[in-house]
Image (cartoon, rainbow over all chains, first blue to last red; front, side, top):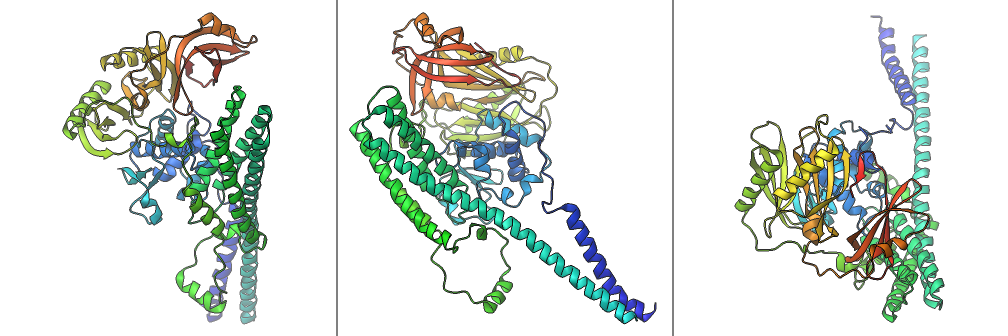
Length: 162
Length: 460
């Protein structure tokens, strides 16, 4: 190859990358992903079941079924508690309450079959935790404050507490 | 020639990169401003609602007309609730103001309780007025703490949006510190909240007939009798129960203890006849009763209808010693029918003593059991004799509504109270309501609207 042409190669690649990145940004738009309006099959209880199912999928998608019901029940226990907002959407979108809301994972989950069933069971009254208000993964870094809560039990990878 | 081309291309690339950077920054600023606006809105809403609630509580204290008192207490109820909602959406990282939240929710609930009392035609007791005055005072101190924060917000030393953002890696942070030295740490922006939360933690407990009353915080199960059972016994009972529910054989896969409202042995069981099917059973440690069963099996297309499912559930209840249970509501979720049963004593339905049974509509097996409400509430009661006749209760109903049935029912009311009522099944236009008329005083205690959901039905 001619030496001058070789010298051109690097800036050309740079420009190509930049143009590519710009086009990609424009294509994606500033709000990277489209938020689907319907989550899974409609179930016959409550308007907020889709939201609940999404949160379960994002927070406990790999947990056993019982652990998924437990997470949903914890949300519903929060709704009934004076320490937390009094609606499901209020509890879910409380700042920093759930990591998956903070990092956007809640909008990316796709497998909602089992979470939808878990949400329905929790809305129908099942609560494997017996009144938990908090849950966390003991393997991940969490606020030390959380360990001061009275621990109820551990289901799968989550510790549940009052 | 080629060198010049290279220079032009490189300069263009640099310009593009700079342009892109500015564009990204503009985007980020738009988002930051939106987040800041959200934080500011929640903060000023909180401050305003706290101040307004304090004013409303003061007005109800000074007023001598119980009608005016009720009006102002209703305002305080809504304002305190709105303050709590705003507080909970405020970004306060590393600080969870749960005591402030509890204080606002309780004040709201307490105001509601007092307003309802006045609406019933009763007077507020001196003690209740003192309690209200104390809460009002606390509300005032809270407003002062929030004003301290407001000063910082107005001076722009507190920006809600600054709490968001990805953390800079440590080496870059050090470089940034050297490049732009930070002035002395500003006073903690959230000091106002920290102070308020610490102070409200020591608030004396508030007992009244409402859902957030302190005496309801740790409910004790009333329906469990006998001593603590051994884990082996719990496992034996779980295997028998799961086997009966699924018409199959189960073995224990894992077992643990759970210290919720009803302390239990929680067990996961595996079906030994059908592969891949697991179920979960909770057995109470005291008395060894079956609290919950939950089978995670996905259910196929239905072969049974709701009536058949209710028959299956009733038979299952009978087989487990629940003889006098009445189905009250039935709802279909996915391919499961969830039937709510309430206990019956004589001809009185006891709504607090509730058991839910879930039936899989593909083969009729029991896939869910929830007796937690039953064991929390069930006890030997001395039911009073109704003073009213069903016809008298019927006469209390709004003349525009069509009455379709009357029966006696014991209902739970906020504050852990139970009342004997006539449950009057009425229809106004196309909407069904259950109106509860106190069987002793004839007062209307409660109205419930039956929301029509697909597959949901009231079973009378």
